[in-house]
Image (tube, rainbow, N blue to C red; front, side):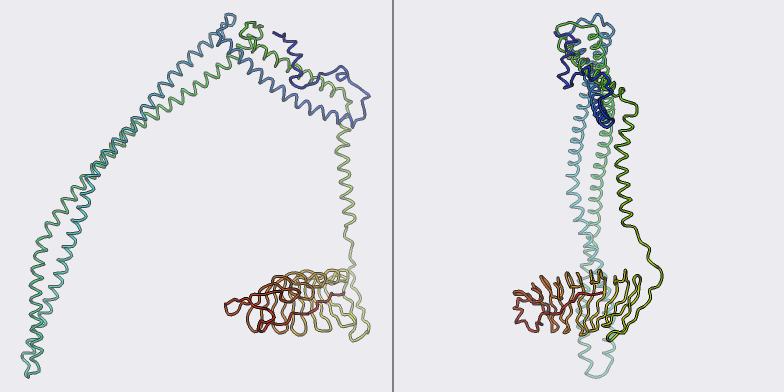
Amino acid sequence: MRTRAALSRGSRADQGIKPVTDAQKAPDSGRGNFLSEGFRELGRKLARSRLRRAIRQQESDRLVALTALGQRAWDDKVDLAAHAGIRDRLAGLDSRAGELSQTTSRLDKEKTDLEAQRRAELDAFATRRKAVEAKKSPVDAALREARSRKSACEQSIKQGESRLAAIAGRLAALERDIATLGAAAGADGQPKVAAAQAERSKLAAEQGVLGATLAASRAELPAHAAEDSRLATESQRHAAEIAAIDAEQKAAIGRIDTDLARLRSELQGASQQSGAVQKDRSGTFCELGKALYDAGARDAALAEPVARVASIDGTRAQSESTLAASLAETRSLAGATMAKFWSVMLGVPLALAALGIGSWQYLHRSLPVAAAPQPVARAKAGACEAQKPPDNGTGVGVRSDCTRTEGTFAEGRLQNGKITYPDGRVREGDFAGGQQMGMGKLTWRDGRRYEGMFVDGRSMGPGLYVGADGTKDRGMFRPGAKLHGLGTREIPTGGVLVGMFDHGKPSGKMALVKDGKAEVVDPAAAPGAPAPSTATVEPVGR
């Protein structure tokens, strides 16, 4: 067996930790400037964090190894006379663990038996209930039929009585009619008398038949009622038997469930006690292992666990030595080294950031705008008097060619508003750098208009173009208010062309939708198809 010192020396390679040399342990006053020393100290801090985690893991591994050593000694029945107190405690814990094991086995058996009894009871009650239901089912069917017959008999009696009352009323009326007609003179009344007498005879015969039928129905009704009552009583008796079986089942199963709940509680308690005993045994095994290791146990059966503990101790000693050497190097640093290091590492980036922010704010500062009103310059030139627009704010500007701008201005350029040209064209929307930009509108004197996206004063993007004849193009536009790509063209005479367009012209075959129907047509031959638009959208000057 290797000695503990040898195991300690050999454990360095196991952990991958380099031995600390004397040069590393000795403070070195001239090892470099504070920046290099600061970076080295950061490395040492990181290494110390890893060492502390390794030492904590080694402590945990040592406890596990000591527990294994104590359990090996106990299981192999090593002579523990020198540790009689620990031995007696372990014996008591083993005895208690055995008792708890027997208790758990007994409770498990009782629980299994009760669960089997519960299933058997449920099966028995289900069998009894099905037997009674088998008797009750035909009785309920017969009861429904008897009640149906009774209801039919009662309905027949009701209808017969109603009909007899109607016949009696009609007979009385006929008797009065016959008497009246018989007293009247003339031969014209004889046919009516004969008809009335014939109807009377017919009703009298029906009255006799109905009377006999009604008497028979009334005679049958008590028998139907008696059968209904007998079957209802029998059905209720079977229902009472089923209710009694259900109540008996609930009581019996309830008693079993109470016993099962008690057994489950006792099993849980036994399990908790077993866990506590096992925890005490592990602690006692660890205590025994420590006592044996400290006493230098030399039993051959314990050689392997003892060597394992010695290896962990050697590794931990090396880790602690390396940690102490690292702390010594930290203590050897000049007092202001890390303060200088952090002042440079944090101060310089903050200063650079502040300088950058300050420069950006200076370059993007807002310059004051003169509040004095701008004089209006008017000069005679051409057909109109020129009027200079305001540099900033809202106002109106007029060029010498009578082009009129009105809206919001910035630095003398229109930002949002309207431009009216001498030829009648009007632009409305947003402007940038003297050009119409974004969503806007352009109208011509003859009624044409384009509403949509503008880029540098030219139609470019989604929009709507309405021609002078009422043609409406919708889709994506190119400069010149020309529909390009997938779009639609609404024809004034009726119908809509749907398909691909190439710079305002239909491209290929298209679908013509008209009066709720669609058909594939040749655009060139489509009735009423207008010529493609050739409108020009000029850029906007100042």
